[in-house]
Length: 141
Image (cartoon, rainbow, N blue to C red; front, side, top):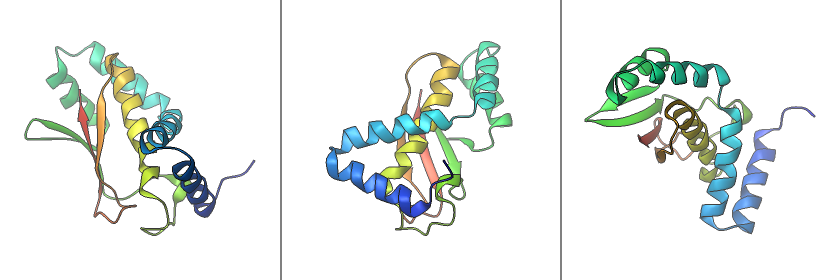
């Protein structure tokens, strides 16, 4: 089975949106994103957390290996200057439903939850797919 096209992915997401409620759609797409979380980053994050004196040290050290991590006014964000999802590469804003970015929510949750061993909340603040100038997710540990 080859790589899916952005148009195919958009059709799948629209189908999920049409046949489920918004929370169920988000959970399905988050689950997909969890499967894409890189095991090498998760392993590094776990080790950093295990050897850190607390969450502030963990975040500072994780930021050294995960450049998208930003701390702003005591809030934790994951920020990307563009969409890095290879599944929808080349898609223009508006081509892919906004709900698709719940995959990124799941990706981020998987990394942090695996690292610290407890649930975290991740909120989509803005995304390139929805017309934003960047992808920004707030992480509540």
